[in-house]
Length: 217
Image 1 (cartoon, rainbow, N blue to C red):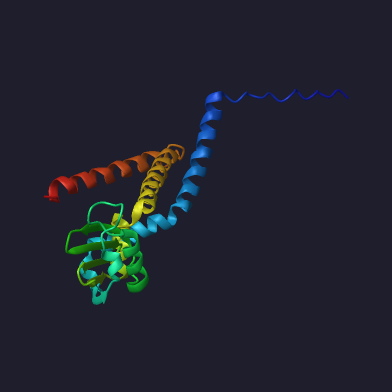
Image 2: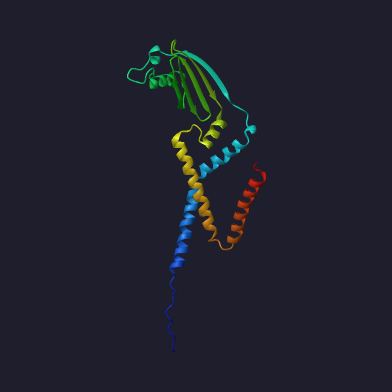
């Protein structure tokens, strides 16, 4: 009985272009998934606060104003030796107010003249203004707290939130840009939905431009 020997299976080498395309799809998908997970909390935060900023009338105003009075130690308001003429010990004065009156936030204004010292502190949803009489040491403190929603809105805008929070906003913008771009690249590898996806992306961008030119004053 004569049997035919099986011929070796022929293999077609995969081109460099196909390999590169496959690797690009894998890397892009990996980036899109994990960047989306990393930026999930950021996207949710800015989405919710974007809504609260756009509709302030939906939320009851929670602003609370407190006025307090006190007397600072005379030594804190005396001219500081070795400093600018007439200046005071600014650090000691601020630390006294933080300890005694529990003010917080960054000091955004500190003015000194012959009769008065004025200090302003700011934080998201919070302001404190203090006026001190240098002759008597008496001071008036006006503290305004605007509530949770106002804090979130100020964080959205980066208002009085400090440099680190500003860096977080920058990083968030970069993350969201990368998520958008990797999603756009991924649609090229979904052959059945590529055309429809690109048409929808173009339609969305066109709609935004039309709304801007038609309705924005």
